[in-house]
Amino acid sequence: MSFSTISVIGLGYIGLPTAAAFASRQKRVVGVDVNQHAVETINRGEIHIVEPDLASVVKTAVEQGYLSATTVPVEADAYLIAVPTPFKDLHEPDMVFVESAAKSIAPVLKKGALVILESTSPVGRRS
Image (cartoon, rainbow, N blue to C red; front, top):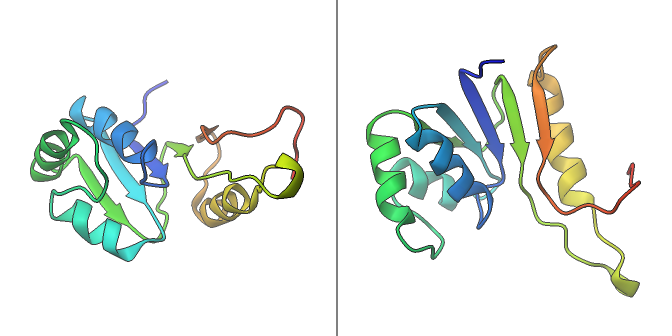
């Protein structure tokens, strides 16, 4: 299976390095984040997190047109959801960010697209 466009939902400490890694392999990557500042920073070829050597990879990927960021999901061949799953009381995971990410891609999800949940989720969890 070939993926011409990959969308990474959540551009934090997992999502942005993953998006940059795909883009460095000359894959078209559209990163999605609710943080407008993060989106603008990435689109300038800069980073909003601290990660050794990531700045140069992001800068090159943006300059070469392989990486861009937006606040609105777009149609893609594959989606990687990398959003936080913080704990609620009694160490129960809060799946609200995962659910929100899934709902945000639903309108642009096409038949045959691959969706990967990278976010930590408990075994057997459906909602």
